[in-house]
Length: 223
Ligand SMILES: C[S@@+](CC[C@H](N)C(=O)[O-])C[C@H]1O[C@@H](n2cnc3c(N)ncnc32)[C@H](O)[C@@H]1O
Image (tube, rainbow, N blue to C red; front, side):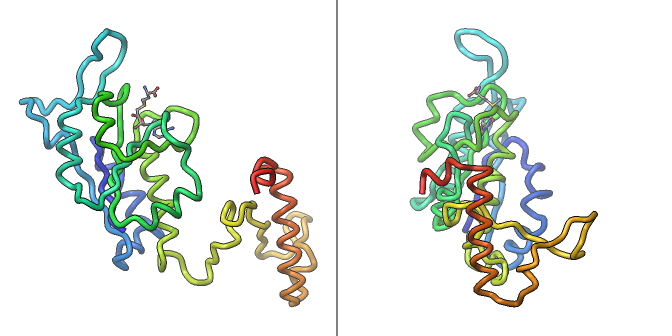
């Protein structure tokens, strides 16, 4: 999978996209990413990329042309261009799976009051990571990139099974425990030491259902 981030703040990406599992995915050649800065396409002598909104009001709006040129510089005929926006379709696990099957994604990160509305025609879709407003699209783009990248074959180790993970089967994940066996007086459920894999698996399914009922009953009604 290849990702291009269209961003005014490319320095935000390496600390997150270059670390841990995503960093290893890049080393293994499973994920390639880079940043394109609309400022490099500004025709203004001060490399300006925003201006005041027509009609008045606070803040600045990102100019359409430097953004359009930044997108065009990386777009091919198989590219999916996604604008991160609080007004977009809510991002979820199903969308992460869908994106993981896409060869090339361009994430466009807005900033300030947002972007000139006329640029919307260049986007294939608009995605939101939740009903709140961030200062910019960079964190949102990395959230979406991380969730999609971990679905790519080979990114997670084989033993990091993803089928039982929250949302994959419509339920939340089952509770996990590790050493010590007793922590501050709290014990690990006895069944997990039984060595009986069928019983453990049945217990985990029940526990996943119970967790879902308690924390996210809306998921059960959707299943
Ligand atoms: C301050 S926001 C602009 C918000 C816009 N004025 C509005 O109220 O809809 C600046 C940029 O942050 C990004 N952003 C903010 N919240 C987001 C969210 N919940 N999901 C995805 N992107 C978001 C978008 O790229 C947006 O253009």
